[in-house]
Structures are given as structure tokens and as C-alpha cells.
Length: 394
Ligand SMILES: NC(=O)c1ccc[n+]([C@@H]2O[C@H](COP(=O)([O-])OP(=O)(O)OC[C@H]3O[C@@H](n4cnc5c(N)ncnc54)[C@H](O)[C@@H]3O)[C@@H](O)[C@H]2O)c1
Image (cartoon, rainbow, N blue to C red; front, side, top):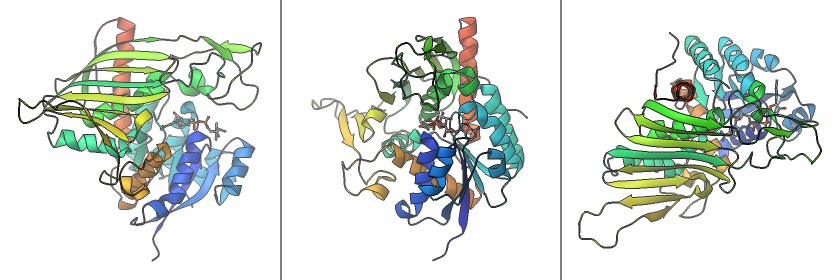
């Protein structure tokens, strides 16, 4: 059976560019029911070694050094943006103007203002957009969404979201683009808080107001001598430079539906290695999920019989009875992993492109996050509560 093709261009073949490229390539094997076939058409990376990898290992038809060539290419339908945050705006705006559908890694822009401009440009161009909020797609997160929608947890009263990563905990970790305003924009309030707030938006709904705090705990880091990521280390005596964005952010929030919540994000705390986690509490039950235990859901359901003694949290293990899981492995407790979520995300995005429909999470959802981030930044500035106001440009 021949299917229509969707020709993909990927900008930036680092961690996430490689993850998306592998994901596009295996969509036919993981989702045989697909209505289209992805083609890895063009990769753009400023690093020649990455360009060699694109054609030699990933099977891209060609690789170019300048992303403008990729955006202008008539044989590219979708542009997937996986470069450092602060280059996203120029690429996304140019891609939308060229009529390409755009998938952009989170948080979309490095600053709220950039995300606002990107969302407006794509909306005006009428292209389909997607954002790399990949944790939405975890089968047990989707299951939690369903439990809440069906009322199984009752009325949601409380929410705790956190993303504690150790990627910046070592003071010898290199001063990569993530630790600098000119490369990343804001620090964790852009980088990883965006995942936590996005999950809460999906599970509980919009946030009404915020009060928060932030801090940079490691203020100097070794400068990279060549290409280096946030997982690479310098050596004692290496020249250092200043960290110019925040390591930690925390806030208390009120949701529009009356629920109360907290969010924290840190890249320097020791201990939690990649805890993108939430606990959601309702009047009939509670659920908790943590990326470090991606294949487990902690679930508390109030018993129908108030005299029931055997109550408490139970652990539900992932399996093929939950959304998407069976596309990867059959049965129960055979786990799936981080990159599988990226494959689900890419399959869903290309399915929306193929169907010509609006996609979620898309730039509208990124705009909802930066509207919260903007309120958080205003709250930190003023020291008081700040209302969330939509930043959408008319
Ligand atoms: N969704 C997630 O879970 C997740 C995880 C990690 C990163 N991210 C996001 O993905 C994006 C990329 O992060 P990463 O960790 O993959 O970065 P990375 O540093 O591993 O890779 C960036 C790549 O972009 C290339 N590049 C830099 N400037 C370029 C330019 N001007 N033109 C073309 N290529 C250029 C680099 O050579 C490199 O190959 C960021 O926006 C980040 O926030 C998302």
C-alpha cells in the first residue's frame, strides 16, 4: 500500500534532533496503522560532524549548514526545530512564513516575548504547530487524564508539580548554552518548569494567579573549549564564565477551578536525577507519576465502603491496556522509555499535519505556559501575587 509522504526537515541534530529523527524513522514500524510515511528529507546543523551523521547514520537525503536553506526548500513539508532556545524564533517565524508546518522543541521561545511572537506568526500563517511537551504522551499520564475526566478522582482540590533534574548539580558541568541568557533565555523557569506547568494545564486546567521565587546557586562554570553539552564536565583550573539565568524556581498557584497547587523546578539539587513528577489530589482519590518511574502510577481510590480497612495507595504498572503502550511492547510491566514518548509525540503531530487539523500540544499551549511564566516573573519582581493574563497577540 502506498501512502502519501510527509517530508521532514530537522534543525539541530543534538540530543533532541537525534531523538526526533529516530522517531520519525520508526513511525512505520511502531504505528503500522499510520495514514502517511515520514521521510527524513533535510537536516540543518552548524556542526559539520552532525551533518555527516545526518546523512551517514540517520539516512537524511541531504544535510546543510544554514537552516535558511532547509526552510526555503520546496521539498520540505514540516520543520522540526531542535536547536538552542534562542535561535527558535527566527527559524519558526521563517518556516511559518514559508508555509511549513512547525514542530518546535519546548519551551518554544527562550523568553515569553519570543513565544508570543512565534505563536502569532504561526497562527497568521495558518500552519499546524506542535511543541515538545513529550511527557503528556506517557501512557500512564494519559490514563491519569482519563481518570480525572471520568470523575474517578472526584473534584480536584490540590496539585503538586515538580521537575528536579541534576543536570546542573556538578559545579564543573560546562557553561553550555543552557546556562546563558543569550543561548537559552531564562533558566529552569523556561527549560523544565514548562513541562510541569503544561502537565498541570492538561490535567487540571488554567491557572489564575501565582506567587513565586527563584535563585541561581552555582554562579560560575567552566567554559567549554569546543562543542559541549550540559552533561559534559570541565577540569579544575579551566577558565570559567558567569551563569546568567536561574537554577531554581518555585511557586504557589491558584487554578481557575479553585484547586490550589505548587510547582518547583531545579537543575542543581543533588539527589533527584530526572524527577518530572506530579501528584494530583481530588475528593475521591489521588494519583502520582514520576518520570524516574515512567512505567508506574501511584493511585489512591476512596473505597465505596467507609469501613473498608485495606485502603491506601497502590502501584499500577504500565502495560498494553494503557494508551500507546502496546505499540511498543505487549503484556504488562514490560517497560517503555523516554524516546518512546517522543515517537508517540511525533506520530500524533504528523497525524494532525496529515489530517489538516489543529494539534495539541501546539503553540497555543506554549502560549498558555508563557502567560503563567510571565505572571511568575512579575510576582518575583513585586514580591506579591500576580494574575495570569493571556499574552496572546491579536
Ligand atoms: N522535550 C524534552 O524532553 C527535551 C529534552 C532536551 C532538550 N529539549 C529542547 O530541545 C532543544 C535542543 O536541546 P538539545 O539538548 O537537543 O541541544 P543540543 O545542544 O544537544 O543540540 C543542539 C544542536 O543544535 C545545533 N545548532 C546550534 N546552533 C545552530 C544553528 N544556528 N543552526 C543549526 N544548528 C545549530 C548544534 O550543533 C547541536 O547539534 C532545546 O530547545 C531544549 O529545550 C527538550
